Length: 319
Ligand code: GDP
Ligand code: CA
Image 1 (spheres, rainbow, N blue to C red):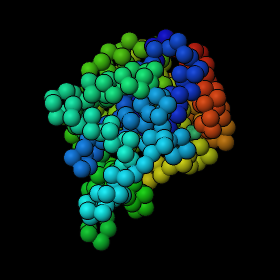
Image 2 (image 1 turned 90 degrees about the vertical axis):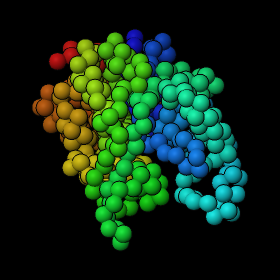
Image 3 (image 1 turned 60 degrees about the vertical axis):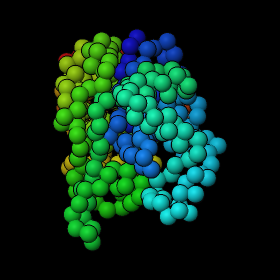
């Protein structure tokens, strides 16, 4: 079975680990969000691609959910001692090696897709990890503070400011001119199943869908498309996704996110048991919906979620 999963960072990576455990024989292609990418200290950093790669490759800092296990921060401390900014982005020593390799390869002319494949040769994530695009797309957030109304990089909004002020607008800069990465459209077209993991609907999945041609491809594929809600009990799990949902006028509820994706894209939607009241609302809109446990406490719980998604998909005919 060929499964395609558009993916952000933590939510996607934990789900993918469960999916791999649930159907080890499946051929999984991940379409990774690159809108979070940023250049710091001359290094190209791809947080979502790395979170997926490290999580599936066994190198993730488990509790934290991003960055490397057994990490140290000597280089960052030395940079801070020089007064070199920014200090708000956690850059571990082990992690730095990844960014050095990536930047070197990009500077030598390799596209991000080939760089990602080279990095994955070490980590063997057990999935094909494809960047959504080889073209540069960077998510910016419009805020208003003492300095007036201005756009800042998504990482600055999310990591530095912890999404503490309203996001007035979210803009994927460069998306309109970007092209799907090599292999992405083919994978979607020839998929047997598309799963939308519980990733951020705006800055992860939304950014991927903003690459021209990708939303259309997900809507046109003959494979069923089943999503899992990142909103549990009316709030994002361990996150601040409600801030960016507000920017696009979508409530932080399991039903609202499903309706935002819409029946053109989604054939099925899983909500958490605590959001069972969303089931009739979502079903009414023409999206098959079930309530199951959606908290990824461990790999077993994530695998059970993957099986629930496969089960829902099995009963669906693509409309
Ligand atoms: P990011 O790029 O690292 O922010 O990761 P994603 O976009 O892939 O996922 C972030 C989303 O994952 C957040 O909005 C959370 O609501 C969601 N999430 C995290 N853990 C869980 C979980 O255990 N269950 C569910 N349903 N969603 C989760
Ligand atoms: Ca992300």
